[in-house]
Amino acid sequence: MTDKLAIHGGPKAVTADTAEQWQPPVEEQKRAICDLIDQQYLSGAGAGVGKEFEDRFGAYVGAKYCLSTDHGSNAIMAGLFAVGVGPGDEVIVPDLGYIGSYTGVIHLGARPVFCDVDPRTGLTDPADVEKRITAKTKAILPIHLNGYVCDMDGLFRLREKYGLAIVHDAAHAHPAGWDGVKVGALADVACFSMQGADPFGKPVPAGEGGINTTNNREYYERILIFCHLHRTGIAEELTNPQYRMLGNQGLGLKWRAHPFTMALGLISMDSVEYRNERRLHYREQLYDALRDVPGVRLPESYPKAQDGGFYGGLRMFYAAEQLGGLSSDKYMKALQAEGVPVTRYRDQPEHMRPLIQRGFDLYGGGRGPILPGTYSYKKGDFPVTEALVGGQLMRLPAYVEPADGVIEQIVAGYKKVAEGYESLL
Ligand SMILES: *Cc1c(COP(=O)(O)O)cnc(C)c1O
Image 1 (cartoon, rainbow, N blue to C red):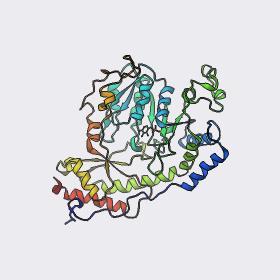
Image 2: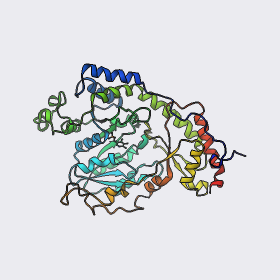
Image 3: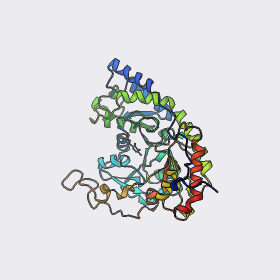
Image 4: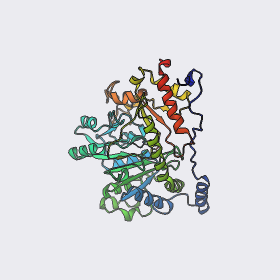
């Protein structure tokens, strides 16, 4: 006989402190920022703290080239520009996604085309991507969502077969890799965000910022000219004569990171591996304990994937059929009443957002890549994504240092609800 569910007035399963115990080194951060103020080094790139960060991050992911930007979404737009996305092109992006992932597609005059995700993983499904490829497709933009790595063998096959580029949205996945190679060193360009603060920011957080990495010299130079106006050394860096003649102005956009971001980013780099290892260990413990609990379906990882980063939390799928069809709303409320810090990823699939459904006259006068009438997507077109964002996809905090007893108590909360679900129907 288990205790009465907390939602019916019983005792809570989770009584431990569910707050993250790990804290960022705030005093060190203050010192680093104050040092820059003392030096009045408040602008600049290609030298000093910015170059130090880029060299360190590039070495960390094993990429030949690394450039920082002011935001992750701008890093993605720069990555798309690098591989030659332009007006009239199509870029395939997951419907279980995020606007910052494909906004650069639109502003380059190209069109995002959505694809569904693999039901086993909730990640960009290469089989569905292939169905969406047309003569206009230029690139695939997979998202390693929450740090879970997409099926890169499947995507690389499509890259070869159709001559496409891959621009990774790795905003959640700085430490992640595929078959021993970090995402930042996989073809063609990887894009990262530094948004937020530890411990719940992006995996290398620094307030606001972004990063591009690539092993391709041409792509690197295209990113330099696209958005690195007046970067120290840029004119000497450029080897392509067409780019070199632009001098240190490039194409005029200035999307570099602030030195404060770079200083904070360096401090985040000191703990990125520690935080990732702890999170991996915690995920293993949690998943092992939840594997056979009715109602929980754990996401699979591809055999060559080295998941990492875990921005947004650890994922699990709700299997309502195992609990008599109990709604995901009631299930989550019962878990939360037990003190389980679960949240449901309930949102619209990207194809149902007003921007896509209604289209937008981007430049006025009936011009632009996503004019009204461009898309004919409707509800039901992306069944896997729609089921996941409709309530199946849930997340728990990806703790670095959980308080004593938290894991056991969270698991007890899940078991309690699984045993007492009939009282919720
Ligand atoms: C955070 C994020 C971005 C963009 O990063 P910003 O630095 O906020 O511009 C892109 N894609 C995903 C999936 C993100 O979570």
